[in-house]
Image (cartoon, rainbow, N blue to C red; front, side, top):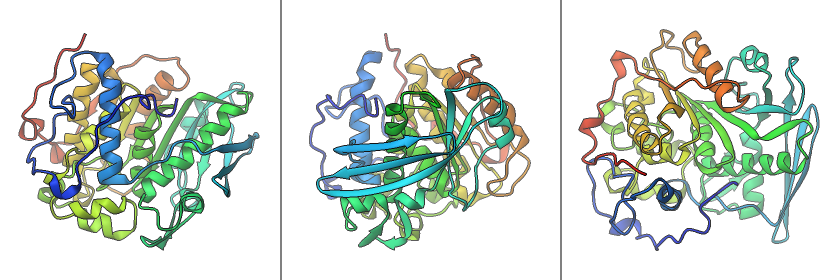
Length: 381
Protein backbone atom coordinates (compact mmCIF):
# COMPACT_ATOMS: atom_id res chain seq x y z
CA UNK A 1 0.00 0.00 0.00
CA UNK A 2 1.32 3.42 -0.94
CA UNK A 3 0.31 4.95 2.39
CA UNK A 4 -0.65 2.60 5.21
CA UNK A 5 -1.77 5.40 7.53
CA UNK A 6 -4.60 6.98 5.58
CA UNK A 7 -7.10 6.03 8.29
CA UNK A 8 -5.08 7.75 11.04
CA UNK A 9 -6.63 10.93 12.40
CA UNK A 10 -4.10 13.78 12.35
CA UNK A 11 -4.97 16.99 14.16
CA UNK A 12 -4.73 20.31 12.34
CA UNK A 13 -1.22 21.69 12.09
CA UNK A 14 -0.32 25.27 13.05
CA UNK A 15 0.80 27.79 10.46
CA UNK A 16 4.51 28.48 10.15
CA UNK A 17 4.35 31.74 12.08
CA UNK A 18 2.93 30.04 15.16
CA UNK A 19 5.70 27.47 15.53
CA UNK A 20 8.23 27.80 18.37
CA UNK A 21 11.97 27.41 17.91
CA UNK A 22 13.37 23.97 18.77
CA UNK A 23 17.17 24.02 18.88
CA UNK A 24 17.71 20.27 18.90
CA UNK A 25 16.17 17.53 16.82
CA UNK A 26 12.48 17.03 17.59
CA UNK A 27 11.58 13.79 19.35
CA UNK A 28 10.41 11.36 16.63
CA UNK A 29 8.53 9.30 19.21
CA UNK A 30 6.44 12.24 20.53
CA UNK A 31 2.95 12.49 19.07
CA UNK A 32 1.26 15.76 18.22
CA UNK A 33 -0.73 15.56 21.46
CA UNK A 34 2.52 15.59 23.45
CA UNK A 35 2.48 11.95 24.54
CA UNK A 36 5.02 9.40 23.33
CA UNK A 37 4.22 6.24 21.43
CA UNK A 38 4.25 3.17 23.66
CA UNK A 39 4.04 0.24 21.22
CA UNK A 40 5.43 -0.64 17.81
CA UNK A 41 1.86 -0.56 16.50
CA UNK A 42 1.66 3.14 17.44
CA UNK A 43 4.34 3.96 14.86
CA UNK A 44 1.92 3.61 11.94
CA UNK A 45 -0.09 6.67 12.97
CA UNK A 46 2.92 8.55 14.35
CA UNK A 47 4.49 8.15 10.91
CA UNK A 48 1.35 9.65 9.39
CA UNK A 49 1.71 12.71 11.63
CA UNK A 50 5.29 13.15 10.43
CA UNK A 51 4.17 12.72 6.83
CA UNK A 52 1.56 15.46 7.19
CA UNK A 53 4.12 17.78 8.80
CA UNK A 54 6.64 17.05 6.04
CA UNK A 55 4.05 17.89 3.40
CA UNK A 56 2.84 21.08 5.09
CA UNK A 57 6.21 22.57 5.97
CA UNK A 58 8.82 21.09 3.59
CA UNK A 59 7.69 19.32 0.42
CA UNK A 60 4.12 20.31 -0.34
CA UNK A 61 1.28 17.83 -0.64
CA UNK A 62 1.83 14.57 -2.47
CA UNK A 63 -1.70 13.75 -3.66
CA UNK A 64 -3.04 10.19 -3.36
CA UNK A 65 -3.66 7.96 -6.36
CA UNK A 66 -5.63 9.85 -9.05
CA UNK A 67 -9.04 8.76 -10.30
CA UNK A 68 -7.57 6.72 -13.14
CA UNK A 69 -4.09 5.28 -13.63
CA UNK A 70 -3.57 2.91 -16.54
CA UNK A 71 -0.60 1.79 -18.58
CA UNK A 72 1.51 -1.07 -19.80
CA UNK A 73 4.65 -2.92 -18.79
CA UNK A 74 6.79 -4.51 -21.48
CA UNK A 75 10.29 -5.92 -21.49
CA UNK A 76 11.61 -2.54 -22.63
CA UNK A 77 9.29 0.14 -21.28
CA UNK A 78 6.54 1.25 -18.93
CA UNK A 79 3.82 3.65 -20.01
CA UNK A 80 1.72 5.58 -17.51
CA UNK A 81 -1.57 7.31 -18.33
CA UNK A 82 -3.28 9.43 -15.69
CA UNK A 83 -6.64 11.16 -15.66
CA UNK A 84 -8.07 13.13 -12.76
CA UNK A 85 -10.94 15.59 -12.56
CA UNK A 86 -11.03 16.07 -16.30
CA UNK A 87 -7.28 16.48 -16.77
CA UNK A 88 -4.99 13.98 -18.46
CA UNK A 89 -1.27 13.35 -18.78
CA UNK A 90 1.15 10.55 -19.58
CA UNK A 91 4.82 9.66 -19.33
CA UNK A 92 7.10 6.68 -19.93
CA UNK A 93 10.12 4.94 -18.41
CA UNK A 94 12.50 2.55 -20.11
CA UNK A 95 13.20 -0.93 -18.75
CA UNK A 96 16.39 -3.00 -18.89
CA UNK A 97 16.02 -6.63 -17.88
CA UNK A 98 18.91 -8.67 -16.46
CA UNK A 99 20.42 -11.49 -18.47
CA UNK A 100 20.33 -13.80 -15.46
CA UNK A 101 17.33 -15.37 -13.78
CA UNK A 102 13.77 -15.34 -15.04
CA UNK A 103 10.81 -13.06 -14.57
CA UNK A 104 9.10 -11.60 -12.79
CA UNK A 105 12.11 -9.53 -11.77
CA UNK A 106 12.74 -7.20 -8.86
CA UNK A 107 13.69 -3.73 -10.08
CA UNK A 108 15.44 -0.53 -9.10
CA UNK A 109 14.06 2.76 -10.33
CA UNK A 110 16.98 5.00 -11.23
CA UNK A 111 16.37 8.75 -11.37
CA UNK A 112 18.40 10.46 -14.03
CA UNK A 113 16.76 10.56 -17.41
CA UNK A 114 20.11 10.80 -19.17
CA UNK A 115 21.26 13.78 -17.09
CA UNK A 116 23.34 11.74 -14.64
CA UNK A 117 22.63 8.24 -15.92
CA UNK A 118 21.80 5.22 -13.78
CA UNK A 119 23.27 6.02 -10.35
CA UNK A 120 24.44 2.55 -9.30
CA UNK A 121 26.82 -0.11 -10.57
CA UNK A 122 24.73 -1.41 -13.47
CA UNK A 123 26.58 -4.70 -13.89
CA UNK A 124 26.25 -5.45 -10.18
CA UNK A 125 22.53 -4.72 -10.16
CA UNK A 126 21.78 -6.78 -13.26
CA UNK A 127 24.14 -9.50 -12.11
CA UNK A 128 21.94 -9.94 -9.05
CA UNK A 129 18.96 -10.56 -11.32
CA UNK A 130 17.45 -7.11 -10.82
CA UNK A 131 15.89 -5.05 -13.61
CA UNK A 132 16.56 -1.35 -14.13
CA UNK A 133 13.79 1.20 -14.62
CA UNK A 134 15.17 4.43 -16.06
CA UNK A 135 12.91 7.21 -14.79
CA UNK A 136 13.16 10.74 -16.14
CA UNK A 137 12.00 12.97 -13.27
CA UNK A 138 11.88 15.99 -15.57
CA UNK A 139 8.99 14.46 -17.52
CA UNK A 140 6.96 14.63 -14.30
CA UNK A 141 8.37 17.83 -12.83
CA UNK A 142 10.68 19.98 -14.93
CA UNK A 143 13.25 22.39 -13.53
CA UNK A 144 12.62 24.63 -16.54
CA UNK A 145 9.55 26.10 -14.87
CA UNK A 146 9.28 28.50 -11.95
CA UNK A 147 7.44 28.58 -8.64
CA UNK A 148 4.55 30.42 -10.28
CA UNK A 149 4.61 28.37 -13.49
CA UNK A 150 5.62 24.82 -12.68
CA UNK A 151 5.89 22.30 -15.52
CA UNK A 152 5.62 18.55 -16.06
CA UNK A 153 3.09 15.73 -15.91
CA UNK A 154 2.36 16.29 -12.22
CA UNK A 155 1.52 19.94 -12.81
CA UNK A 156 -0.57 19.04 -15.87
CA UNK A 157 -2.92 17.41 -13.38
CA UNK A 158 -2.60 19.62 -10.29
CA UNK A 159 -1.90 22.99 -11.88
CA UNK A 160 1.18 25.05 -12.69
CA UNK A 161 0.54 27.10 -9.56
CA UNK A 162 0.53 24.05 -7.27
CA UNK A 163 2.47 24.68 -4.05
CA UNK A 164 3.97 21.18 -4.22
CA UNK A 165 7.69 21.06 -5.01
CA UNK A 166 9.55 18.86 -7.44
CA UNK A 167 10.65 16.25 -4.89
CA UNK A 168 7.06 15.39 -4.00
CA UNK A 169 6.07 15.58 -7.68
CA UNK A 170 8.84 13.14 -8.63
CA UNK A 171 7.65 10.89 -5.82
CA UNK A 172 4.11 10.99 -7.20
CA UNK A 173 5.46 9.90 -10.58
CA UNK A 174 7.20 6.81 -9.20
CA UNK A 175 4.04 5.93 -7.27
CA UNK A 176 2.13 5.93 -10.54
CA UNK A 177 4.76 3.64 -12.09
CA UNK A 178 4.22 1.27 -9.17
CA UNK A 179 0.45 1.44 -9.77
CA UNK A 180 0.99 0.27 -13.34
CA UNK A 181 3.38 -2.51 -12.30
CA UNK A 182 0.80 -3.71 -9.76
CA UNK A 183 -1.91 -3.73 -12.42
CA UNK A 184 0.27 -5.57 -14.95
CA UNK A 185 -0.17 -8.95 -13.31
CA UNK A 186 3.47 -9.45 -12.40
CA UNK A 187 4.62 -11.31 -15.50
CA UNK A 188 7.68 -9.10 -16.01
CA UNK A 189 8.30 -7.04 -12.85
CA UNK A 190 7.55 -7.65 -9.18
CA UNK A 191 5.59 -4.81 -7.62
CA UNK A 192 6.62 -5.83 -4.09
CA UNK A 193 10.37 -5.84 -4.79
CA UNK A 194 11.16 -2.36 -6.11
CA UNK A 195 13.98 -0.08 -5.00
CA UNK A 196 14.78 3.52 -5.90
CA UNK A 197 18.06 5.38 -6.29
CA UNK A 198 19.50 8.67 -7.49
CA UNK A 199 22.46 10.95 -6.88
CA UNK A 200 22.69 14.65 -6.00
CA UNK A 201 19.33 16.35 -6.78
CA UNK A 202 18.06 12.93 -7.76
CA UNK A 203 19.37 11.61 -4.44
CA UNK A 204 17.01 14.10 -2.81
CA UNK A 205 14.30 12.68 -5.03
CA UNK A 206 15.08 9.04 -4.23
CA UNK A 207 15.05 9.82 -0.50
CA UNK A 208 11.66 11.52 -0.77
CA UNK A 209 10.22 8.74 -2.93
CA UNK A 210 11.25 6.05 -0.46
CA UNK A 211 9.87 8.01 2.47
CA UNK A 212 6.48 8.70 0.93
CA UNK A 213 5.61 5.40 -0.78
CA UNK A 214 5.59 2.40 1.53
CA UNK A 215 5.65 0.01 -1.43
CA UNK A 216 9.32 0.89 -2.01
CA UNK A 217 11.28 -2.02 -0.54
CA UNK A 218 14.75 -0.44 -0.69
CA UNK A 219 15.69 3.25 -0.75
CA UNK A 220 19.19 4.13 -2.01
CA UNK A 221 19.91 7.89 -1.92
CA UNK A 222 23.40 9.00 -2.94
CA UNK A 223 25.07 12.31 -1.97
CA UNK A 224 21.69 13.97 -1.60
CA UNK A 225 22.87 17.19 0.07
CA UNK A 226 20.64 19.94 1.44
CA UNK A 227 17.00 19.08 0.86
CA UNK A 228 17.89 15.40 1.06
CA UNK A 229 19.18 13.44 4.05
CA UNK A 230 21.20 16.07 6.04
CA UNK A 231 19.42 17.57 9.03
CA UNK A 232 18.31 21.13 8.36
CA UNK A 233 19.44 22.23 11.82
CA UNK A 234 23.01 21.11 11.17
CA UNK A 235 23.48 22.50 7.68
CA UNK A 236 24.17 26.17 8.61
CA UNK A 237 26.99 25.23 10.98
CA UNK A 238 28.62 22.76 8.62
CA UNK A 239 29.11 24.97 5.60
CA UNK A 240 26.73 22.98 3.42
CA UNK A 241 24.42 24.53 0.86
CA UNK A 242 22.22 26.86 2.87
CA UNK A 243 18.47 26.29 3.24
CA UNK A 244 17.81 29.53 1.34
CA UNK A 245 20.09 28.43 -1.50
CA UNK A 246 18.48 24.98 -1.70
CA UNK A 247 15.05 26.62 -1.75
CA UNK A 248 16.04 29.21 -4.33
CA UNK A 249 18.10 27.09 -6.73
CA UNK A 250 14.92 25.59 -8.15
CA UNK A 251 11.56 24.53 -6.78
CA UNK A 252 12.67 21.19 -5.32
CA UNK A 253 10.99 22.05 -2.03
CA UNK A 254 7.39 23.07 -1.52
CA UNK A 255 6.51 26.76 -1.54
CA UNK A 256 5.80 26.67 2.21
CA UNK A 257 9.45 25.97 3.01
CA UNK A 258 10.19 29.57 2.09
CA UNK A 259 9.02 30.53 5.59
CA UNK A 260 11.84 28.48 7.15
CA UNK A 261 14.92 29.31 5.08
CA UNK A 262 16.31 31.64 7.75
CA UNK A 263 14.82 29.89 10.79
CA UNK A 264 15.08 26.14 10.36
CA UNK A 265 14.85 25.65 14.12
CA UNK A 266 11.16 26.55 13.81
CA UNK A 267 10.54 23.41 11.78
CA UNK A 268 8.56 21.00 13.99
CA UNK A 269 10.41 18.11 12.34
CA UNK A 270 13.74 17.44 10.69
CA UNK A 271 15.09 14.96 8.18
CA UNK A 272 15.86 12.29 10.79
CA UNK A 273 12.09 11.85 10.91
CA UNK A 274 11.94 11.54 7.12
CA UNK A 275 14.57 8.81 7.50
CA UNK A 276 12.24 7.27 10.07
CA UNK A 277 9.33 7.38 7.61
CA UNK A 278 11.19 4.71 5.63
CA UNK A 279 11.37 2.40 8.67
CA UNK A 280 11.24 -0.55 8.93
CA UNK A 281 11.90 -0.92 5.18
CA UNK A 282 15.38 -1.10 3.68
CA UNK A 283 17.45 2.10 3.56
CA UNK A 284 21.06 2.43 2.39
CA UNK A 285 22.37 6.01 2.42
CA UNK A 286 25.56 6.60 0.44
CA UNK A 287 27.47 9.81 1.07
CA UNK A 288 30.61 11.74 0.17
CA UNK A 289 32.71 13.13 3.05
CA UNK A 290 34.99 15.11 0.74
CA UNK A 291 32.47 17.80 -0.28
CA UNK A 292 31.35 19.92 2.68
CA UNK A 293 28.64 21.52 0.55
CA UNK A 294 26.80 18.18 0.66
CA UNK A 295 26.50 18.28 4.45
CA UNK A 296 27.89 14.81 5.21
CA UNK A 297 28.13 15.39 8.97
CA UNK A 298 24.50 16.46 9.07
CA UNK A 299 23.55 13.45 6.95
CA UNK A 300 25.35 11.16 9.39
CA UNK A 301 23.39 12.69 12.27
CA UNK A 302 20.13 12.18 10.36
CA UNK A 303 21.03 8.53 9.81
CA UNK A 304 22.00 8.00 13.45
CA UNK A 305 18.82 9.63 14.76
CA UNK A 306 16.61 7.85 12.24
CA UNK A 307 18.31 4.58 13.15
CA UNK A 308 16.94 5.01 16.67
CA UNK A 309 13.44 4.58 15.25
CA UNK A 310 14.59 1.50 13.35
CA UNK A 311 16.00 0.20 16.64
CA UNK A 312 12.76 0.85 18.52
CA UNK A 313 10.85 -1.04 15.83
CA UNK A 314 13.22 -4.00 16.08
CA UNK A 315 14.59 -3.31 12.59
CA UNK A 316 18.01 -1.83 13.35
CA UNK A 317 19.58 -4.15 10.78
CA UNK A 318 17.58 -2.57 7.95
CA UNK A 319 19.41 0.78 7.77
CA UNK A 320 22.91 1.49 6.46
CA UNK A 321 24.93 4.68 6.07
CA UNK A 322 28.37 4.71 4.45
CA UNK A 323 30.53 7.76 3.80
CA UNK A 324 33.90 6.09 4.41
CA UNK A 325 34.99 6.32 0.77
CA UNK A 326 38.25 7.44 -0.83
CA UNK A 327 37.03 8.96 -4.10
CA UNK A 328 35.82 12.53 -3.62
CA UNK A 329 34.28 12.97 -7.08
CA UNK A 330 30.60 13.88 -6.97
CA UNK A 331 28.34 10.98 -7.96
CA UNK A 332 31.20 8.59 -8.66
CA UNK A 333 30.43 4.88 -8.39
CA UNK A 334 32.57 3.69 -5.51
CA UNK A 335 33.93 0.22 -4.84
CA UNK A 336 33.31 0.68 -1.09
CA UNK A 337 29.57 0.62 -1.80
CA UNK A 338 29.51 -2.51 -3.96
CA UNK A 339 29.33 -5.20 -1.29
CA UNK A 340 26.82 -3.42 0.97
CA UNK A 341 24.73 -2.67 -2.13
CA UNK A 342 24.81 -6.34 -3.07
CA UNK A 343 23.78 -7.37 0.45
CA UNK A 344 20.92 -4.85 0.51
CA UNK A 345 19.68 -6.08 -2.87
CA UNK A 346 19.72 -9.66 -1.64
CA UNK A 347 17.95 -8.81 1.60
CA UNK A 348 15.22 -6.52 0.34
CA UNK A 349 14.75 -7.21 -3.38
CA UNK A 350 15.71 -10.78 -4.26
CA UNK A 351 14.99 -12.01 -0.70
CA UNK A 352 18.04 -14.27 -0.72
CA UNK A 353 20.08 -12.63 2.07
CA UNK A 354 19.82 -11.51 5.66
CA UNK A 355 22.88 -9.36 6.38
CA UNK A 356 22.53 -6.54 8.90
CA UNK A 357 23.10 -2.97 7.85
CA UNK A 358 26.15 -0.96 8.85
CA UNK A 359 26.72 2.69 9.72
CA UNK A 360 30.24 3.74 8.78
CA UNK A 361 31.08 7.42 8.54
CA UNK A 362 34.40 8.85 7.41
CA UNK A 363 36.39 10.27 10.33
CA UNK A 364 36.46 13.71 8.68
CA UNK A 365 32.65 13.83 8.43
CA UNK A 366 31.34 12.20 11.59
CA UNK A 367 28.31 13.63 13.31
CA UNK A 368 27.61 13.44 17.03
CA UNK A 369 24.00 12.54 17.78
CA UNK A 370 24.35 13.34 21.49
CA UNK A 371 24.80 17.01 20.59
CA UNK A 372 21.53 17.04 18.73
CA UNK A 373 19.01 15.20 20.88
CA UNK A 374 17.50 15.54 24.32
CA UNK A 375 15.19 12.54 23.97
CA UNK A 376 15.71 8.85 24.60
CA UNK A 377 14.75 5.82 22.57
CA UNK A 378 11.88 3.85 24.09
CA UNK A 379 11.64 0.09 24.31
CA UNK A 380 8.49 -0.70 22.38
CA UNK A 381 6.58 -3.96 22.86
